Length: 102
Image (cartoon, rainbow, N blue to C red; front, side, top):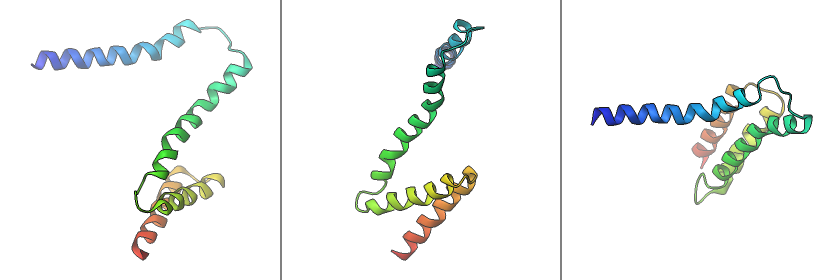
């Protein structure tokens, strides 16, 4: 049983390592076109948006304003350039206050 778990961990590490290392090996010394570089720079933001948006809508079944208020409380300081910790703690504070007043 323990050897199966060990081999599973090694296999998962190997499967995770390969897709991360292949681009370094395949594109070593090559320059990607500017359009592709621009697209790749925006992938983290698009992924984050795809993960966050459903959570805003479905955070509470009976109160959609909870998610909207939390998103607005996070968006404003983030848009103004605040640190990520400030954005998260500010949103938590606003939602805590909203929950307390409800």
